[in-house]
Length: 136
View 1 (spheres, rainbow, N blue to C red):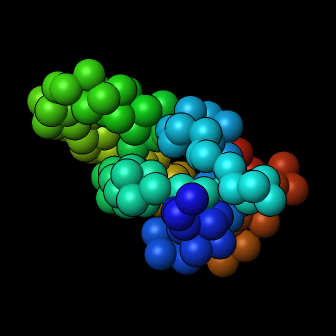
View 2: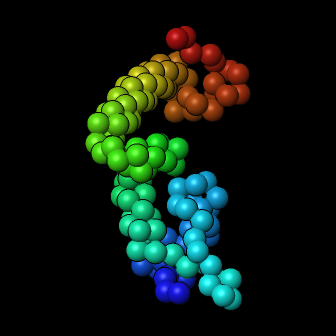
View 3: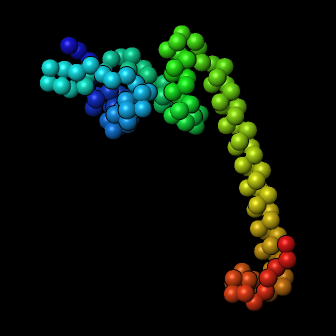
């Protein structure tokens, strides 16, 4: 019986053996065959699946999202449309987060400048100590 043992598979795929076991538990890769000595033996198809998972993670996809794509593939459906939807969704959420963080940063800077105008160099310290409260 031939195949890659877990350490070999992990090394070639660029992940840890622990990651391989974890993906196996989650159902991202199928349980491997076993050697007579009960070593896990993985196929080239398992290696390709691990490489697909690694590439999908470059798009910041969750393991659940990756599992959806793998299930589509296993049904003979190219997951391109779903991948496109997922990536566009991530980009939209990132754009929203950037807008929220920019607004937060601008508000914080405004509060800081207002407090400096009232308290001078010890602006933040004076606010925390309760000496002056800035107006919103």
